[in-house]
Length: 162
Image 1 (tube, rainbow, N blue to C red):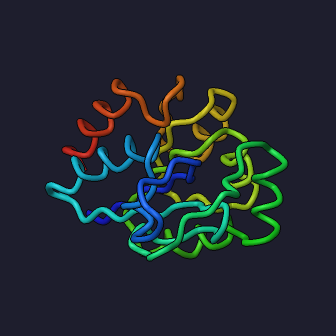
Image 2 (tube, helix red, strand yellow):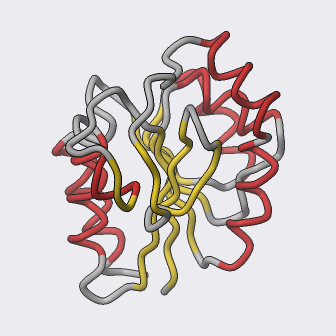
Image 3 (tube, one colour):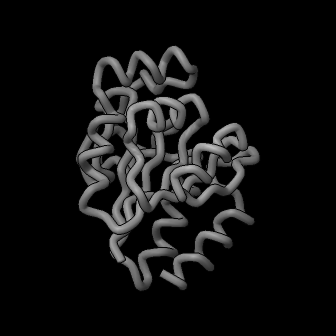
């Protein structure tokens, strides 16, 4: 199974430049740990919604930057500038499943943009339960961390059934 994992950046950088998934630290590490654990048995790719570059592949070489949005207005400005929602709609077509781990204000933009494919799983705000049920998407509630240990274990269990 081909899985696309989508998350947003943050302000923690481990080095000045390199592959996006190698230089970003902080909560991105939690997502990368899940990616590694799912890679045993699945073809897993990472996409990052970057404050500087928009939606990029995790293996894209980038330089450190300081404009990682963390507000509703910041996510909206980034969408206007880079159309990350539109790019996700196209990118996700070549995957069997898309897993999304972004803040609720960014999730709102992805939903409004029709960016999420038929087979989507997300850890997100409970305000989206109705939308997820209506579309047949898999929903796990976000409580603090991007994924959380309990949700990560649920995702790993689910992936063994895929």
